[in-house]
Image (cartoon, rainbow, N blue to C red; front, side, top):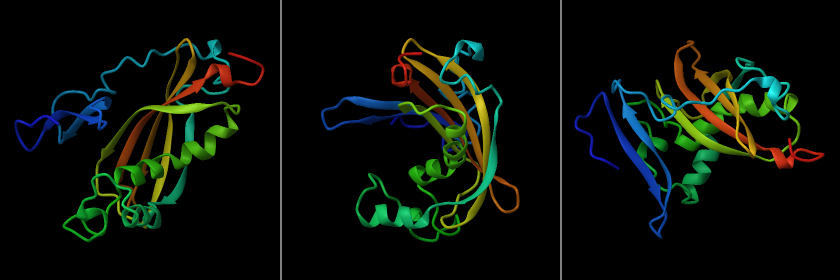
Length: 200
């Protein structure tokens, strides 16, 4: 990572490197209001006319993803910790702290925020091969393990590339008092060649 110039309202560049020194992921990390958009918020999402799409023909921009109530998966996170499957575990993932009870790791948080799309999208999109592209999560408040949150969202944008149709999803988790706790912007790429009957 880069070294931030200050400990608040700052944004730095971070990256993930393999043992062979290949960079496999890169993006910003920020705290507070750094006064600059994140990498995804600054990106041109390349919107397209939905009528030009095949896999996503039944999906429209701003399609709501109906809210549901879901629990941040404490048992799953504790299993990953016990099995040594977290690359960089920190005490707040397993112990009470000034943040309250144990908090969700990034993976647990993404799982929580992706539950509504997992339920809704199969009703709108045919069975195809998909893969996640870019992902941004924001912590607005601590998300605590084993607590229930209202999770909902919408389709932020539709796009495509020569080989994929692209879905941008926004989702949010609110606590029992209705306070926004976390949000996510996720890119899902759907392979045109995997659509039954041939490429889209």
